[in-house]
Every structure is written in C-alpha cells, then in structure tokens.
Amino acid sequence: MAALTREETEALIQEVLEIYPEQAKKDRAKHLAVNDQSLEKSNKCITSNRKSLPGVMTIRGCAYAGSKGVVWGPIKDMIHISHGPVGCGQYSRAGRRNYYVGTTGVNTFGTMNFTSDFQEKDIVFGGDKKLAKIMNEIEGLFPLHKGISIQSECPIGLIGDDIEAVAKKANKELGKPIVPVRCEGFRGVSQSLGHHIANDAIRDWVLENRDGDDSFPTTPYDVAVIGDYNIGGDAWASRTLLEEMGLRVVAQWSGDGTIAEIEKTPKVKLNLIHCYRSMNYIARHMEEKYKIPWLEYNFFGPTKIAESLRRIAAQFDDTIKAGAERVIARYEAEYQAVIDKYKPRLQGKRVMLYIGGLRPRHVIGAYEDLGMEVVGTGYEFGHNDDYDRTIKEMGNATLLYDDVTGYEFEEFVKKVQPDLIGSGIKEKYIFQKMGVPFRQMHSWDYSGPYHGYDGFAIFARDMDMTINNPCWKQVKAPWKTEASSDAVKVAA
Amino acid sequence: MPSVMLKKNSEGKLIFYIPKKDLEEVAESVQFDTTEKWGGEVVLADGSRYYFDPITPPDFPITLRAKRVDSGE
Ligand code: SF4
Image 1 (cartoon, protein in one colour):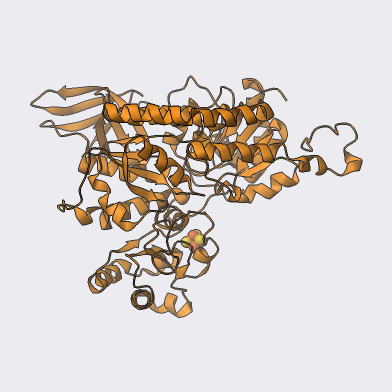
Image 2 (image 1 turned 180 degrees about the vertical axis):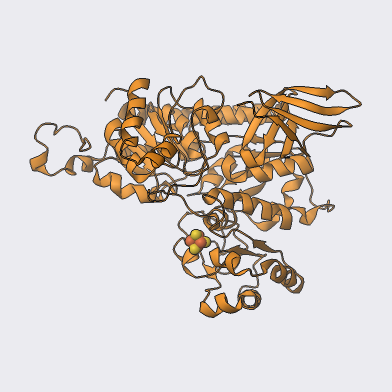
C-alpha cells in the first residue's frame, strides 16, 4: 500500500475520532497528529503527558512501575522492597529482562521479589514496624546486599506511613544506604512521574555520598552511561563500543549497575544519556551541581551509532576522535554484511511503533538502515520534549499518536496496513490475531541486545524472521482468503 | 514563579528549561547581560517572556526563579 498523503492521514484521524462522544473527541483530538517536519516545537501539533480518559484502553503503567520497575529495579546489588501488598511487585517481577552478572540471592537480587506483603492489620495500624523488621531480616538473610530501597505502593501514601524516619533509623543501624522512594502508583498520569521521583530519590539519598572523597582515581576519559537498562544485554553491547574508542565507563545507570557506580558518577567528565525520558532529570541536576555536561546519543543502527560515536568523541581530545573512527571502521564490514543480507528482504516494509520513552524515535534510524520506513509512532508516556525530538526523525505526513487508545491503534492499523508493528505485550496478541507481524519492543520479545553493532545484527534478523515468517499466510481461514490469497491483509 | 534551569549550549546561547512544563527553549535576548549585571526580561524563541531579578552574573548552569511576563501564545 502506498504512503498516505497529509490529507488522507488527517481524514483518517477524523474518521477514528468520529466514534467518541463530544468531550472525549475533543480531548483525544489533541493527542493525534500528522507529522510536519517544518515545525520546531511539538506543542503546536500534539499534546502529551496528560491524564488518560476514563473509559478508554490505555497502556500506561503507574509511578511505582516507573520507579521500581525501570529506574531502581536494575541496580543489582541493592534490595528493592515493594512496600505494600504483594501483587504490584509479583506481577511485574523480572519482566523487563534487565540482564546482570552476579549470583542471584547472594550478591545480586535483580530477579527476586521482596515485598512487605501488606495485610489488613498493616493498613489499619500502619506498616512502619513491619518495614523495620523486614529490613533486619534482609540483613540477616542477605548480608552481602549493598543497600535497600523502599518502593512505596499506593497504600503507603494513603495511610501516611513515615518511611523516611524508618529509613534513617535503619541506615544508622545497618550502616548501608537505605532509600525511601515516594513512588505511590497514584502519583502523576503515568510511569513517567515515577521516573522523576526515582531520580529525585537518587539525588537526595545517594548522589552526595562521596562528595568530598577523592580516593577514587579518575581519568580524563571517564563517562557514565545513563538510561540504559541492559534489556537483553543492551548496555553491554553499548559499553564495549565506548571502551573500544578509549573511554572509561565508570557507571551504568542502571542496567547491570551497582550502588557504588551511582555514587561515583559525580566524578565523571561526561554523562551519556540514552533514555532521555527516564533520566534527564538526574543529568540536569549533575550538570548544575557538579558541572558535568551531558549528551544524548542513539546506539540503534549503524547510521545513528556512527553519528553518536562522533558526537561523543567531539567532546574529547584527538585520541578519542581517532578511537571513534577506528571503531566505526572496524565494524564496517560486519554491519555492511548485515545490511546486504537483510535489506533486500525488508526493503520498503512499513512499520508502526508505539512504545515507551525513547524507542519511538530512537529505533527509526535502525529501520531505515534496513530500507524500512516508520509510518506511525507514539509514546505511552512521552512529554513535549520527546515529541520535539521526534518531529525531525519522522517522515512528513506520518502519524503521531500520544497515549493511543486500544481502539484508535487498531483502527489506524486497519487503515495504514503496516507490514510490522512494534509495541508492547498488551498489544501483541491482538495484532497477531489480526494477522499483522508483531515485535514486542519493550523487552525485545525475549531477544536482544539491539543496541550497538552487535545488537543491530540481532535486530535485523529478528525483524526479518518476524515479517517474512510463513505463518502469516496461515492466519486466515482458507474459505475466507479466495481473492487476495497472496498477501496477509488485515480484515478491514 | 516557575523555577528555571539555565545553561549555555555549545554555541554559547542560553538554554531555558522549566522542568514542570517540559519547556526547553533557546533564549533570544536577555535584558542585562554584562560582566556586572545579569537578568531582567528574557525573551524566548517561542516569543514568551520571563523576568529575572537582576543579579551579579551567575555561574551557569543554575536554577533561578522567574516571573512570567506574558504567555506568548
Ligand atoms: S497503581 Fe498502586 S496498586 Fe497498582 S500496581 Fe501501581 S502501586 Fe500497585
């Protein structure tokens, strides 16, 4: 199917909005837009980071998910208590595939679920005593942990427990960092505020721990990787490139990261931000307080990788600049082979994305390297500044949808008929049943890494095996396919 | 009175950031920008205006409080 024109895309949005009642239509209209590359600012065309409408399907998470699941959870040598009832932590346990090295249950705790398992009596009489008790239990059972974070679930804020006081007391008793995080699920409109709260907790309870302590030997090439959660090994595939060009990666925030790395980050020369949405707050804070500049980069697909390596190198001296060129040259044969193999199989295929904080714009380059085209994209919980950064990456007259509802997404797909959808687990089975090839782009569908040159090879293979999988021809019942049996078209 | 994070970009231009509003904008002009005095009315690229009480030139990046002069919308 040919690309839609601007008018057709606008008409499509109108058509989809038609079904809503007046008020909802007015509200949703602000979140759907046709991309216009000539705009500098996204607030001219799209509204974001607003409360979802009651009654529509949204795919967003809560502030607890943003703090425990995204920012704090991957810090592997700390124990993160899901403070409150058992479900919030248990149902999200280990779902993000933040890889780490270590012995789980001994010196690392990433895939375990720690909870204070609130019962009725804890709600009625308060849970502070229980919290103090379980921290002592943790110390006895897991003596090698390097600190505890208390991730508040909804009830904590509602019953007014004083977790800060408990944390301070435990910190004195145990002599390890104890961090209370006020990330109750009801705060904010999505997981995004949870990221912010988690960043602020790191700022207030961890970052200053080594101020005035110069015992850590530094080099002029120290950097921190911020906002890489090591999904399927992403941070490792990124880190090797930075190290090969001569930089020293002092800290990984927070995939495969440790609390010691976080504490040492104020000593680095440059902060490198991959997921801007979830960690720009702390980068801005470090810029102001420690005068550490920060730089956004993108390690999806060879074009963006080369651009990013050069931009990073430009912040350093000639040895690093030469290092960047050396790295790009070294991998050239490798990534060219990937492109030569998969581009002919994927050329011209059209993709619709709907993901979280950075990928709706970051992966566009990787698809383009394979000759594919992203015809629609949107953020679950992006803000204006994310859309500002998206407008130039997307083609003209493509679809932008913010906090898209289940209904809108399905209708868009029926009309646009993409060859591939990249979104989350909640969307996966709907679209697969509709016969549209689908990749789960939050946890890479049990695959990965996708970052770096190594990741690009896996990315290309995965896209190919999904799109060109013969199973799509079998989805429709034989008696329904007479006319267009060649293609797998969505039943419109 | 929003808190505004101010920094200089690589071209030496002033970048204006209001965390609460995700507003990230280049400042087109600053009323007082000398070695003795900094502040006054700041006009952003999108046309909105903010007022800072004049102070001795600060060390950027820094967070300061500003008054909104008009909406510019
Ligand atoms: S909204 Fe509240 S109860 Fe639900 S998962 Fe989040 S913290 Fe738990």
